Length: 88
Image (cartoon, rainbow, N blue to C red; front, side, top):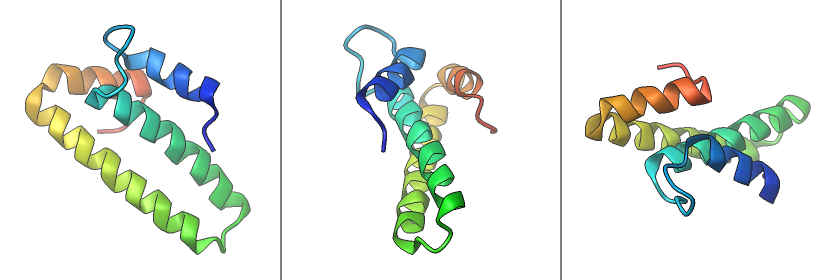
């Protein structure tokens, strides 16, 4: 589970201004943190099928946000990929 402090750190990495919480960049950052944490959980608990399904949903959601951002602004997309160290 993502703690408040971890979520704030994930937001600070990519936010455009102080109150930015809903931009695609921020949403991608939060989803990436949640995906990383859930992947670690699944390594310890390989039979947890419900969490695996949630992980797949989050990955699909992040992919959708990234496709939207790439369509809207290639420059912002490249910036997010670089800051979050995601593969294209």
